Length: 68
Image (cartoon, rainbow, N blue to C red):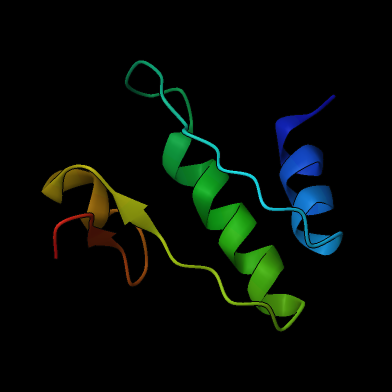
């Protein structure tokens, strides 16, 4: 199953799950989070982009680091 569809399905069905997106550089991690965020915002849902590093948070609109 496509991870995008899985996460959107979990959110739409109000299931409480957590996902950690990890991978090598240039594998599309910011693209995935931006796409998920845009989709959820279009559905009038709340999406918070939280990252573990300052650099990653700069790539996401409204992104914050965990300890902010």
